[in-house]
Length: 169
Image 1 (cartoon, rainbow, N blue to C red):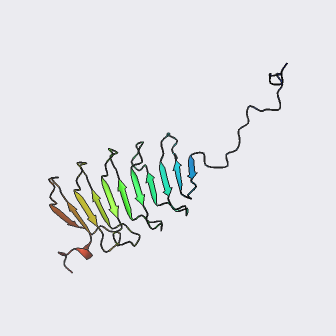
Image 2: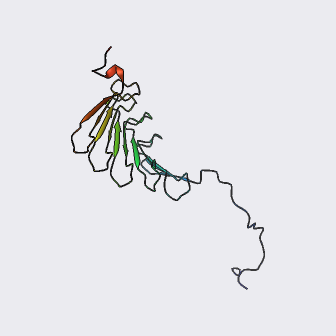
Image 3: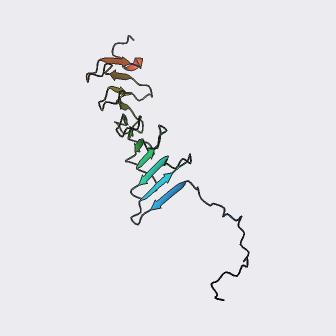
């Protein structure tokens, strides 16, 4: 008999043993030699990533965060935080998951609040609605819309009395 042949003895192995996880089983973080890292998570256990974050400079704060906001298998929204203050300067979304951006928002004055948004509501590849909040009170002040989708903006709606040039004081 060879030392490698099974002897039928049980060496105290318990088939019910499962190690206690010491980490989140649905998060993978890869760290690279240049200090950068990427994190991926599947929180709803469907086999598709729900969030992916990249930290190019390795400081622990992601510059790009991709999320699944619209329920399909794709990461359809990206938050861009160039200055890494925790507030995105830009947001891009593919709301119908056809591979093209349908909504975009920006912090045009770099104060940490998104104040401009553009939408392609009929998914033809052209912007047909723009919303702005120049006084940054959190209310959309002006919405400009191409209602018949002919490429010409034809309606303006003022949503904030303070910035409406036609409102009476």
